[in-house]
Image 1 (cartoon, rainbow, N blue to C red):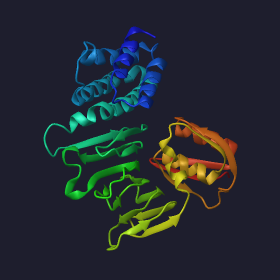
Image 2 (image 1 turned 90 degrees about the horizontal axis):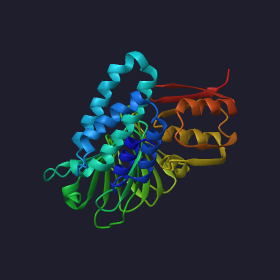
Image 3 (image 1 turned 120 degrees about the horizontal axis):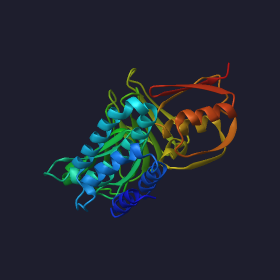
Image 4 (image 1 turned 90 degrees about the vertical axis):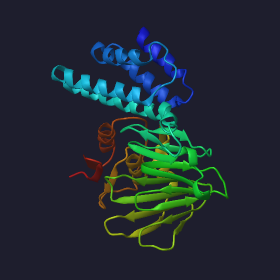
Length: 331
């Protein structure tokens, strides 16, 4: 390992706010690319300018500048090594974006009273965080959570706003209900574990309850819908219809684990887990035999590679368009 890589890793490990999982991702990327001088030299030089002299406080704006300059150099060298450079820098950009969240989010929200704190995960990355009341939250790819750190218990309630997908394990506090604000509905709890999904690209807003009890308020319904464990609420923004169904909540929430070993599981459950893990809308043809069982391990594979392998193991074909994964039988 060259000295530049060792220096960056040592620096990151000195920051206690960075999750261990993220540290391993960053170290893995640096190790894999340490021999690619063209790619790493730009990142190392820019990093050294900001942090190489042992700068104390990490400033989010400095890391944003770093990311912007790396992307700028991406444009300059793309003529000679476009495919490899774009792929590697895209991955690096994701990691740096999560770093902004992991080590800069509380700084970003501490400038003045009432200023919102924002937690962000980049495309293809996930992150774990702890809120001021001790509630733990896991953000899926391309998601953001905002809250007022200076006035978290606003009007006797705990308020957060989510865009994307998140899993919550809420600290019990009967005197301060926990409110998750989504674009088209609100979820209220006292202490429970559940997940919500509210991506801009999807017309479906979802709440899946693992433990406890939640109340969900949707447009056009004066009375909140109460959910119990292993229930899933889906609100269709196009039709305005709200549907509650019984399900295996664990299947929808397994994306929170970085590595998941699935043993003799129905194809339908595996596809649901894949859809959640990769933050895509899932469209399964009625002609697909979702009861077929198989075993596999989900880690951080590319979605295209994973579906190609799954297609080889089963009698399915697939297509990936924008943020939608369609699954249908082989011709």
